[in-house]
Amino acid sequence: ERDQWRALDNVTRGSANVMDCAMANCARTNCTVPEYDPEQYERGERGRILRRAKATKSKLAHDVKRAMVRGVEGEIRKASMRYFQSYDAKYVAYSAAWETMKRSERPHIGVLKELAASLDLFKLEFEVADLFYKSRDWGYVGQQRNRSPSPIINPGIKHRARHQMVLKLLKVCFGEFFRDDQYCVISRGREEAVNQAIAHMRNPNIQFVAECDVKDFFPSAGEVGGPFGSTQALRSQLPMLPQAVIDSSVLSSGLIAEAAIHEGMEALSHCPHAKTGMPQGSALSSYLAELIMSKIMADAETLAPWGTHMISYVDNIGLFGGNADVFNGMLEPLVVSARNSSYGSFDFLRSQSIRH
Image (cartoon, rainbow, N blue to C red):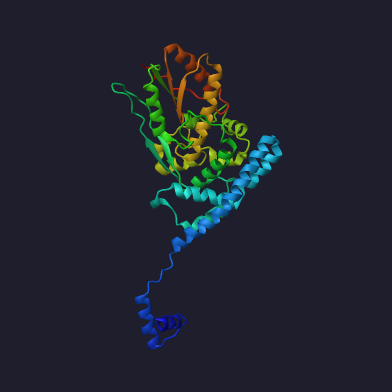
């Protein structure tokens, strides 16, 4: 056996001896030698890079948060620039984006390093995204709803990486701003929100329920006063994000327009806010939606004469209470808070009445 392995070494070094070749074949037959797997190697390489990159990314993001706490605009700007120009932060974002994609749509894992090096959040990305329409004609038995379908974006890995990079910074800066009655971004999900609603309905002290759904929430996010209101509104509320990052990675500029062009003119006719608001379907838009709704709900509670139970999932709020007067005392403050929001002017759909 030792002679066979020596013969295999000789053949590997270039020997053409007939006996060496025969014994080398015996060595290959008798012993299973693990073959080189490029993808497995790249996964190991990714793990080694991530261990270092996550620590660097976390430090840079917390530097931005500390600058925000001190309130010095120059420090915030410098810290955020260091974060958005960091290769490690970009690689972590691309790795997270790669994980969120379907296996059939993922690029080879080996190209993540090259893609991360080329990422520039200060420039628009015109990678074509998939656009599809989700029907909103569901409703209660006996009711007819004539609502236009909701445009949903399925972005590619470049857009996903941009969203993930902004999202990871916002999670550090706004991690403690969310409420216990919000269920989208704090790792509980839609099913837990439904279970909580069922628990409220089983409470004998709760007799009424109402659904409050914001009309065209994602297309109108940030729209305050004029064609450039989106950037101004979001810039004042998200000071850790440079204006160029808001334009290229937060708002729908470029992304929905490219998707609509890809789908054709019919898609454009369904997308009146093609260059405003936030793209519905990305992880970043859901996070920002709950951040905005948490502020609206908190402001409404300060104006309401009575408290009531609320359950929020993205831009939907469920209200639960014991009598109609409590609801009227909470619905109007919600409407006022939504219209006067510092993130934009939002309107609730009033088609849903209070139900027993």
